[in-house]
Image (cartoon, rainbow, N blue to C red; front, side, top):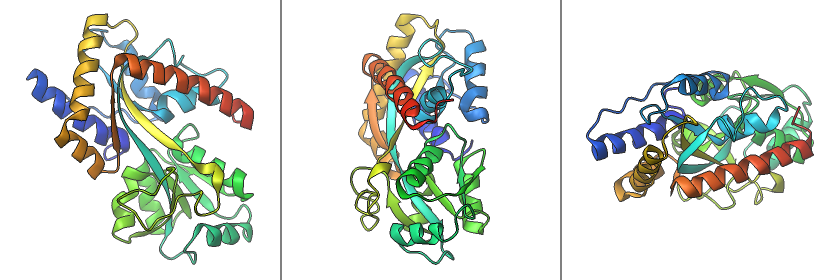
Length: 285
């Protein structure tokens, strides 16, 4: 959806492609069903390189890994073109909640089992998985409230309709920095430079919530190899441009700029990794 992480990153790539090829590049949001609606649109399009899809780890790997009978094949139905960025998640609560640390939140939640609520963009999304891992590690129990996008969940958290988000950092960065919400922890293995006072989950005493999401550009599986190669190189180059790198970092991403070969290998490895992990923790059903 607009202002979500996929939209924000896609617009940076689209602007770079417009300049590079001197062609208009339109970003069209197709929200819903954890990216499945957009994926179906892409698969119906001509595989000529003119219709691409920006997707996240949640859209194209976690959703597939959680379903034995997934509605798409993450290896056959998707043609990886370029990796664009990675991102952490951040644990946030409403300013009115009487907690100021992860430990205080755990104590607060344990005193109210099954009473607190958390939002996410769907059961196959990074923000949902982060809370599942948090509950598993801490022995807490909360009720899930699904949303069509991170910004909608954030608005409800600030309004007091839900109690917790462990949301992707680019969506909540400004609200944490300006004090509109309390940032309790981040899921990266290191403190984020833009939030030096917010500890990692490990530093806060919860070791099993280290989680980094990622974004990439995909095409339909029958795209000509030459078109794929040209687009993959172009997008990798665009993401590595100093001005574009700065824009990614300014909204909470760390740019990666993986080309066709590197991103294809990365995508296949991520599918294998998360299918095994979801099976191990009992979330693959």
